Length: 286
Figure 1: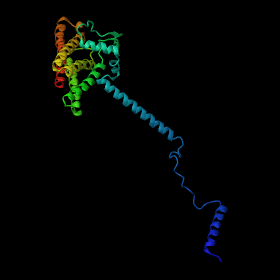
Figure 2 (figure 1 turned 45 degrees about the vertical axis):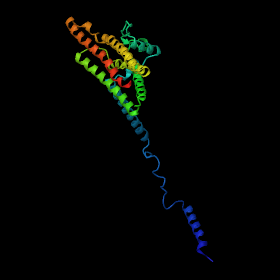
Figure 3 (figure 1 turned 180 degrees about the vertical axis):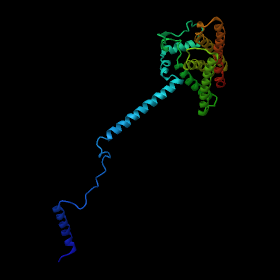
């Protein structure tokens, strides 16, 4: 008996044989079309466009870097910072000795080689940023230790101590720059030089606080008094050569008047160092 079940495979087989004999299909299979490279229909278009985009992006990045470096160098010569950190162990030892015992030192002039100051590791009179930077960090650590001995230590209070010392340092440098502008002093001192000279006082501050923690408040006053006198002498003997270097090329009357202003300015800068040293340390020793 013929049944639907028996006839179904025969129908499929007959349809398959008809498709094979005809050699074509009713509908073309287009499922794979359009899923390849979008630029496949336009040979040679993809590579030039991507290369152009990469070149344009590189050009923008280069211009942005040059603009950023130019604006930074306008305020702080970043390219010169390497000079101020060119120190070694011998220089650091000599400089610390000069900051604490400046009285016997005779030659305070910075050495030059072909109109370029030599690196600090070759000249103890050259300013550096290594000692001021390490002095600032050490001062913050010593301040934390001192606050701990008074049961007042907290991260917030230590942050206030650090930010206060940094703000006073920046204000001091800005005040010196403004004073130099008002007095119309032409000098080769840079902002980084002033930052270095203002940062040397942290050495005396550290000595004073440590002496007070170890031996009491009288030791703090004695050691701080010595360090204040030393930094006063160091600052005057260092800055007077920088601030008075222009006077030789001026007339006698002009030279006399400006020399007096420059000497007052030098003494004011030197006298400000002990004030800051006491202001930033007196509350750390009880």
